Length: 575
View 1 (cartoon, one colour):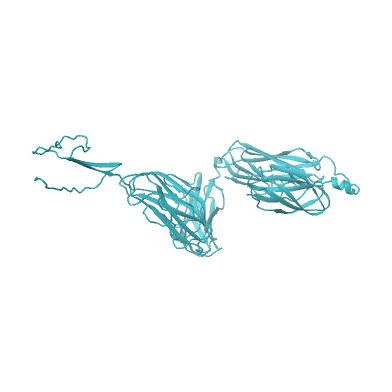
View 2: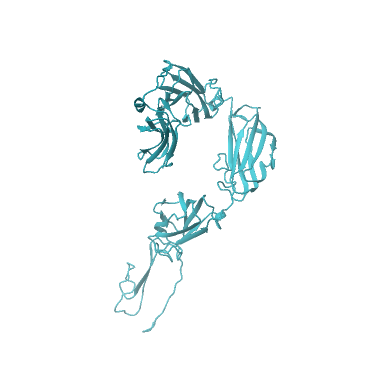
């Protein structure tokens, strides 16, 4: 190589694996002429230290791409007052893994946050930060935000906020105008206010019996209702009949049904319309313990507000366009419950005094009973006395008179004691309660089948009590001074504001028949008394203020008690 001469070598390569940095080192290995500044082939550290050595360092890089998308049916226009799921997708094309990655995706104006599901990491809806962490080369991660549309337009923007590994062509967190400039940024704008007409199909199913044995007749009835904004077309429901059921016939008011294909071709279903299919058969010899019939809508147009057709193999319904019913063997008592309801009370009551009734519900054997509701209306001439106690986990609603028991295992009992107030009657009084809902079926009883108030089945209970003494005889008219000291008849005519916000200044408007004093009783739906106050009122319309700022959020009941009488309650909501 002559003095002053320069030679060049170019090597073309491709990166196959890089985690942090890549260093390429070269040195003169041999030379036949002495070099005063360097010694050929003497470097073992791969760090240049002489003139005949050189290196280049290449840092690892990620290649992150961000995108935002909406469901296909909303690509042109967004319906108002609907939940819509938007997807933020991040892909790292490598070659290096992206590290300590966060994405800023703030919930935009014009929508309300409902929920978030991240395939990797967590999402803080308050800050709008999706914390991901590491994204390997060629990995894709997603964040699905379900938002409730509130106004006419939604405009969304997202960007990678942090990535500790250099990104080819992008700088994290450098966007301030919400306009996409780099591939680690994404935007989505969908005009709203153009109300898309969607369907809303609801499929329900019932059976002619809940308990059967081999050879019994059995009928399944399917009902499909469209409560959407437009007619559903091309509707098909698939109902693959279960093992243990033998098909005999079907009847239909609309469309056609094929047992061979298991398809009910409904056709078009207008807004507010219902189509019904009845399938009749018998319980087959192969039936042993239980059979479940499951059906779902497998085709429909246009899109459904609440469901996606043909997306669930069953047998458990998860959307409105699916339904199922399970039939049990009457020969297998382990499938059934055995509910016994009893009622106890003191045999006599005192007029104008409180009186306690105790219900006991026992599941004597068999399966665990679920979804139990017991109806216990106040007996005649009794009003709520302000107190109810029940087994933990059970709740009594003093407004609707329902005692809810979520579940009751075999051998388990629960109790509820309700304290009521007698309002001026001395006749014998009968209290009655019955189970109005329960699953699975109950041996020897059918929920909510008694309209007489006289117990017939074991899931019903009643008791008759008498007055301990007669009602007092009427007295002479009182003086005005005496009236001022009495409790007087009163009617609640208005409660405002309703709902009431956190400040808690509640105004109750009442109409009083005379001057005097009135008790105001505030309770929650479980009967827990939260506030009792006595206020003076004048004859006519009165507006009385109460401080309920210490009440929790919920639904509450206010009652007045005057002249030994309880008025009709009023309800209000605290936000």
